[in-house]
Length: 99
Image (cartoon, rainbow, N blue to C red; front, side, top):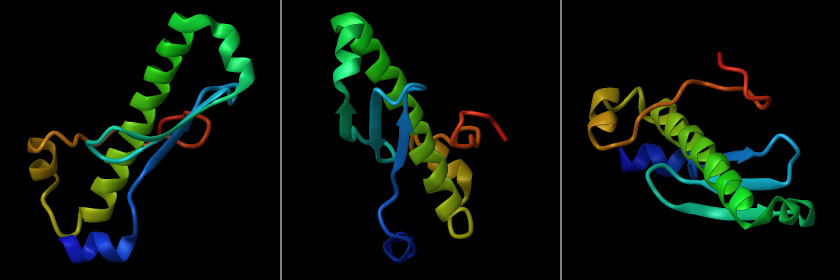
């Protein structure tokens, strides 16, 4: 399994707010690797910005989890990943439409 992941490269998920003010890169099951906030996002105020970062981070995490499932589905039973707490999210395109 580790060889399979090594060949595929780092598995991350990226998500942005609709206006692009907040962008988060996350890994499966881990904390965000990167959080980018534009100057415009600061107008949301501390509570609004915190809520938006959390919302976008959760979306990035779901994307990373889905990519992990897609990468490992040939070598690991998806139920094992789910049992480890890495749940596959619904596939979404870049605009948030579920497939």
